[in-house]
Structures are given as C-alpha cells and as structure tokens.
Figure: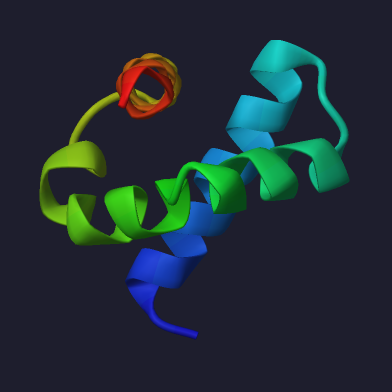
Length: 68
C-alpha cells in the first residue's frame, strides 16, 4: 500500500465520521462519483490541508459530479 492509498483510507474514515455514514455507504458513494481517483490524483494538494477541508472539498467534488 502506498502513501496515497493510506491517505484515501484516512479520508474515507473521516468522511464516514463527519457525515455519520457506514463504511459501505461511503465506499459506494466514492465509487459512484469517482472520489477515489479525485483524492489520489490530488494527493499532493489535499494532504497538506486539514481533514475537515478535505471532507468539504470531497463534498464540493461530489456536488459537481452530480450536476454533470
């Protein structure tokens, strides 16, 4: 497992806690809107911010994906 994958797991856990979702719900949501790729592709920028910011950024990303 590389550092980007470890960060993705951390993001999943934080997102789950913040939104009071199950792990399964978050995995399904992330797969549906390709959030995994978003987090890994943007690791360099995201990992330098707080996890709250990352959760908010993921919410913005999902909202934009829903609008497509």
